[in-house]
Length: 338
Image (cartoon, rainbow, N blue to C red; front, top):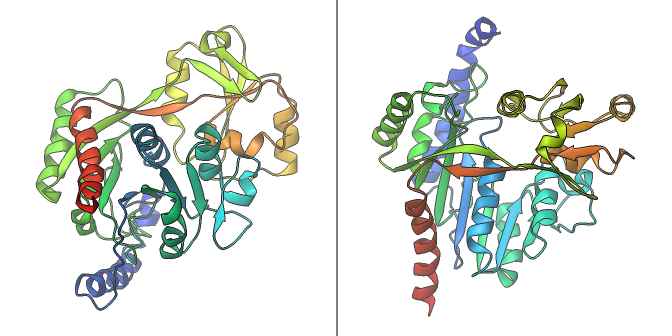
């Protein structure tokens, strides 16, 4: 596969020409970026695939929701609906997308909306919000966020990647310099500290911005709509792990380290499960899945023994500095208005 992608390098050069020209037109003001009279925080990445955007959005929700009216705007990837739509807990993932439904289900007190046109979405959310979080909007340059967080995984940092289709970069690495902060995500538990420091130094040198380090923190409870069980419940019960995310390896490794005995059914990111696959899953006595996949499966599987394992973003250090950057941005904006 690596050799095949290497053969696609000439096409990456064409892709670079197109994306670089687009960014240049925005940088020169030929294409306009809309700024807003409300704090807008963008969470995004340079690569395709999972870098931990959803856990970061949820981290920001928890940080801000007690002091501000928080709204989340997503495009609602693969949803069957179109245009602007407020997300309700009664929606299905097919109607609004799995991540927006997850945000609304976990944090019913916030406003969540989906809209492919981020400008339209922001304008419609402004009367209901004091801060707007943009999910996966780093390349949406028609919108100028007040604060932008760029995520990159430890195992596949954008610095070592190539442009599509030879690599996974959506745009040139130089785009990272538009970010206000860079967050390294999914740092493994068992990794040499020196390697983490080396990547942190490279990112800081390249972007000139603050760099933060995080890992995935797994909960100690498995949950479903009916309730919760301790993760110890799994240790003497064989089960099936069903994943439809970009990289399930951290979850697989976590469960193995917990001493769990399971078989893995792995599907592509944002997978839409077929009837045959649903039937196969229903035959399993105990099924564990990710929170995103649970949003897609819970309305399709009539099974009490379907659980998900929640995850959160956990900072390895300097969490207070990151929180201060975010809170200072929001408070400074509102202080100016007052």
